Amino acid sequence: MLNRRHLRVKTLQALYSYQQSESKEVKPFENALLKSVDKVYEMYIWLLSLLVEVAEYSKADAEGRANKHRPSVEDLNASVKLNENLFIKSLKLNQEYLDAIKKYKISWSFDPEVSRSVFLSLINSPEYLVFLQTDHHTLKSDKDVIKHIFKKLILKSPGIEQIFEEKFINWAVDKDVLQALVAKTFKNFSYDNPIDNKLAEICPNWDEDRLYIIDLFNKSVAFEMEYQKLIAQKTKNWEAERIAMMDILLMRMAITELVHFSSIPVKVTINEYIEISKEFSTPKSNLFINGILDKIFADLKTAGKIHKAGRGLLE
Image 1 (cartoon, rainbow, N blue to C red):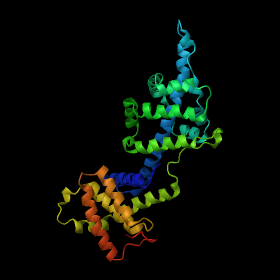
Image 2 (image 1 turned 60 degrees about the vertical axis):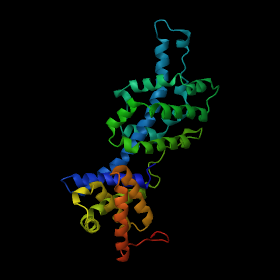
Image 3 (image 1 turned 180 degrees about the horizontal axis):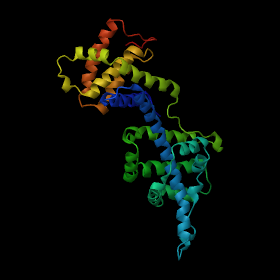
Image 4 (image 1 turned 90 degrees about the vertical axis):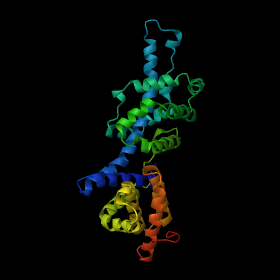
């Protein structure tokens, strides 16, 4: 699921796009920010739909083998058990899933070889043989083989990786979140009655988180000049062109949180932006940002501009 760090990264990306754009109309970038969150959910549905495609291919494979000119006994008895998988059947009856398939117009018809390649990689695996040898369907055993398909075949396939990278610009950034969403789905699907099984939520507290990212983005834009001056005062010994744009944006966002988000502890804010800088900025940015933010925080605190709403939030 998307946690606050992921949401900060989404906001950072929107702020970077705004900063690089000639247009300074805020609303389109605010909409793009919300869309970037929705794209994570769309990728999640694409992954679930690929699991369905692989399961359904087992039926197509069995039919193709049975229709050979001279089918063998093995061909005539090819298993379609994967297509009868209880997890897959429950997913195909899930209204949230069906609505999302329709909303995002999801179809793998553009590359039917994807499900075939995954299935062919699956059929000789020990996990698949165990699944076929199980006398009765149980939700646990059926989920186990689908987990194997997802973790060991889909996520490890360079071809599938390339497809998602081409379709979704943030695939690499969001991949860990997507794995967590699918893992949560496996956990959620624990009831025999399909109606009781729920998809994972992209953000468990989306109403609150939506307001958070919109407010963070808008205030980072609105107070740009004021917070830029604070940063400039603490970086006088640095040539402006030597300070990475990403560092500037991260510090502006951090100051915005320090001043305007009373329920977020100071330590959490500073630590979060330091950690984000390790992934999205230069090798030494974390040390630079840490030093500058500590000085800015001290000045803001002295000036009485830091107002936190509970004990332990200030330090």
